[in-house]
Image (cartoon, rainbow, N blue to C red):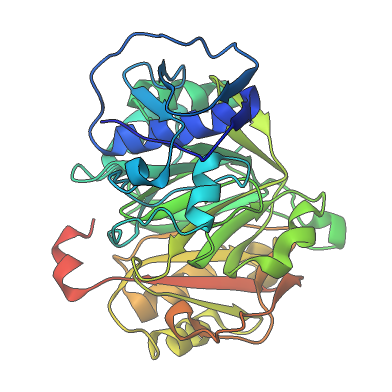
Length: 398
């Protein structure tokens, strides 16, 4: 598989920008089934890329050793023959992003985004559970691990053992909620004592990791360069306010404020102020989003009545003052939502210290107004997201 990146005249890319391009190429090559091993003809350590005319060089990415990449400086005639499978995170600094913005590159329609998830209580079984939720028929676009008290080295070992070769994001949370296969239902786990600082009873404790595997049309990133045609996206942000500064340009989104967030890079976790996973308009099954302070079942029913298809997965991001701190019992909201959408529908999410969601809008991204949906950081609320799919996909559900 050859990936052509071109420009007219002189091309100037520094090492950091070239690394971004290689990361994109790695994802494309992996999703296309991998490439034959190639030789390194141009070392990445070269600090600049300055070629003109039709000079061509081949580079093997250090990110995924099996994928060689072809970079060319030339005219749009060559570029028209290139085909790239979507979706892509395109950093604004890369030549490919500039070409896309200029309309010189078009991508074929993507498949519908799929979310597979499971809550794992023991780190020893994490690698196996990651493999179990990764669809055999499609390469992963992104993997998100929401941790509650597990050692991060254990998470990294599990990712390596599972052979994950896609963008990986990790967050340490105030609490997680998701489908526990041992219990056979969706459960809530909140950090021990969390909420007592505000006079509540406090979380009951526990540890675990929520696995979120995205395939079939998701884009992921940790800068404000989300796709221009993103229909909606999940956002996990730290308390720095970095996402708030960029939120005005974001599409309809749902998520929350966490303790810390990282991206896996070079085998280590690098801090990021936020990360996101987006579904792209035209190639994604609609996602419904609402913000509520009342009864969870009523909120779910309100979205379900607008749903264009069956529910495939449910996202829930409550404030940590809710859950056991609001109801004096655990699993109240997850159980209420399950009664509406079905007990077999898996949920995912985390307890947040500030919930990210729409201010007034309640509905599906496919019906969102053209001017965008005002969203904000809330307090003492829950954010609900319903993922839908077509009837034809029903047989693929976990």
